[in-house]
Image 1 (cartoon, rainbow, N blue to C red):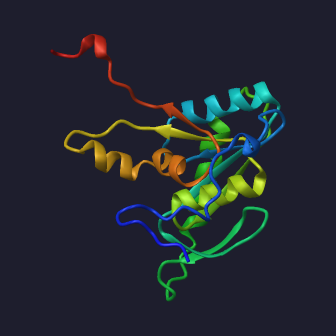
Image 2 (image 1 turned 60 degrees about the vertical axis):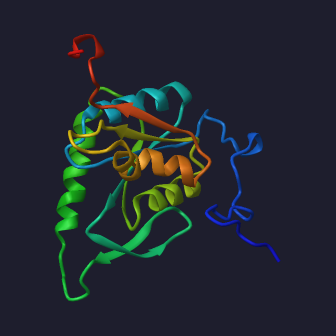
Length: 186
């Protein structure tokens, strides 16, 4: 019988990152986290990488207003409204807005892409999709902390940071806003 050391996570049964678990980049999917209003630089960066390796793009949006009902082996999910009494179809409009956003961002880029509308915990949903697609990597937008937000809170809320702790694929964080160190007041 194994025992968990105090204050330490129990990881004996979790498969750890290893050389033999690396998915070759060539001709494999890239999963791309997307949110409404996101900078097009995330989609364009992902398209550039996908073109370079001959892969496909699978954009993943995880709706915080939907509940995960069932995950399928192909990475798709069945989801429903948070309230069982609600018959809210606004998610369909959001899905179409995301499609338009991605289409606009990828104008001029010849790359195959799909949008996956997911629900549940974001890191878990994106990991499930990446596993189902045998993706070589995950691409996410990286934001900088807003004033007053402590670094620990920022990292706890960061999808990229969560993904690096809960699955073995590389996570490419695309900067969408940076600090210009050259013009910082000392």
